[in-house]
Length: 326
Length: 310
Image 1 (tube, one colour):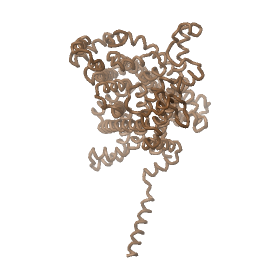
Image 2: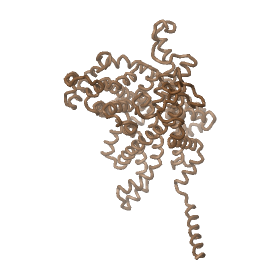
Image 3: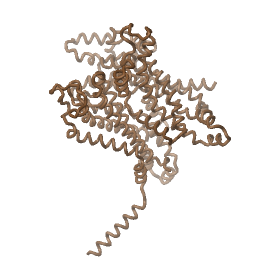
């Protein structure tokens, strides 16, 4: 029962956060004034009348607070408005729906893979602190956190895409259906996913390894570990049964944050690999100052981040019963 | 005369000896820092890039934005002794451009970190020390900034500002300010935590009972005790700001008139197939500089944190 109350409490907690972010996004899109003025700045032939028509069409002639409430009202009806420029004014929800899956596919598989690899490496490194293995793991991870992900991407494309020619360098699908490996659409997509996923995995891997290692070291110093060892338990039991669960608590809290920052970083990863996801949609919309799409994607990513945080909180409460009682 | 002088210098020497016996906290930190090879390497890298930025016009063989390759029909030639890092598709000497990029990277790094850390220190100190309602409000705002998709908002702001600003306005300063405005939140939270920790210690209680004012306690007692955390966070913040600036420029939202490493990578990304050298070298410098600040930051943490002292 207490876990349900805990979830409800967290949900209530997220509401002001949600509105605060919406306001910032709205301000961001209006900070420079009239969107129509911005959109038409490179079009000297447009008449004042045409501009006024545009404003009325998009409801931009109304006062700002009114526009915000209209936006909110529409939002709760699941309507994010229509794009100014993309695909002849398609609904933003349709656009996001078309691109979101590819983004999730990439980000989630990278997150999953990096956790799968990072946790055992981090544990091993902590177990053999100051050994050669530990030194090389920490050094590699530290360097890994310093390489910009787009640089990593470019290097991977140069080496594996062009010099070795093992994987396609960009896009999510081959242009011609005849080029699909084994004639399968799904295998073609997986084939295109290899490079971006590998790069993204490596980029996420490095900080997680360092986190797992330091948190494991912290736990191994605790008295109850000493007690477990003193009572003659095998090293394996001590590490995996006693230490791991507590060592993973900070890691779990970071997963939500990582997922959020990965989603927010989608414009970068998707630009390098020409991956048709929401990140590239966002870059395209921002270049064209297409505010409904900008608002829509930001809103979407924020919601996803908040959900990830909520799931994190719940998991957190599950792993560590002390949290729930707070 | 002579005798008097010698006694004076004797006295002076004695004082000097006495003074050198007491070792300050900074002395201890410096001694520990000196032993840390990784941190020294980081400082060396930063020093190297600072040197490049300071003497860029002397080091770079060609003036900024010059097109030596274009004039001589040597566009997109691979690295050679003439063009150390090759030339790009319009004929820029990549090495010269990389050298000029150092200044932009450091400018944005220091500028954004200065702004972000000022905000973070302000919020962290006030929130941690005063507590109560002020703390509550400030922390809710901080949380918003923690969850917000920072890169997305940054791109929108930059695009909008460059769209409305008359030409000449904007540029790297705007990029630095925007990065600073949106990246203080995690640091504010850490500083607040440190303030809370220090606030509970006995010496604060002691100065309170001696009748010290709130302001005095905050600036003379708490601030110096969280200073080491602030220094470490600032160093790491510089690294983050450099990374973010590179990302923004890479996506084409940076200052189009400045020479930046991110922008060079963006141009290179359009032609990785033909010319690997266009992207490999600028990216290497971003990585190096960020690594430098990270190593320095970690080294400072180990040297300055009294709890890590063995």
